Length: 259
Image 1 (tube, rainbow, N blue to C red):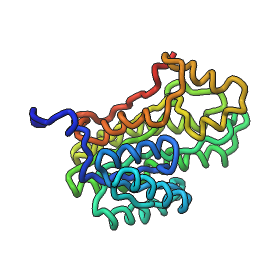
Image 2: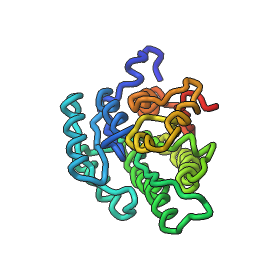
Image 3: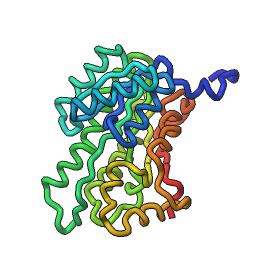
């Protein structure tokens, strides 16, 4: 990369096309908005058509970027290719894929684990990103490469009582990140992951009724707080842009420090 490239230009995403799964709210919405602000055209994915359309329109209005709703369920193996095809039909290419969509229902201890619960979480949290990455990478290769960003969790390292299906799936996704990075390096496709800590998303707000949960989540970080969703944007832009041209197979923890 040329020495004269400025720091601002390194993070510029003008001309790139990004697909953000689970992009209608929370971390996905923040990353979709951040990518649009950086100049990317953004496809906002979610399983609810109205939410997708609303998020895409709001991001377009707030940033001036081209956007589209890319409706699709990450647990639908066969449905992901038509969804990606719609993005390619609209924008002609894909440069950035952010696999952010994930589910984490009511916790279930290992001794009470049901096959249906386990399969539901792994279908969305592991098989979905595996499938969509496998579809997107060859398309990226055709246009000179790209960046795939998997969103895992700090729980992939530390686990958590009642979270076996969720955190084990995210640990698998962390491993798949490294596998994909090795397999697609020659294609110019970089694959990295973000491991968030405690962020004030809708999922986190849903725990407010659990005594002491939010306080405990905040205490995990050295900063003793829960982050705002927008605090994930800088890491996402780094991995999506040319700033991370020599970064692949890496997991970046955005946790405020974990004690």
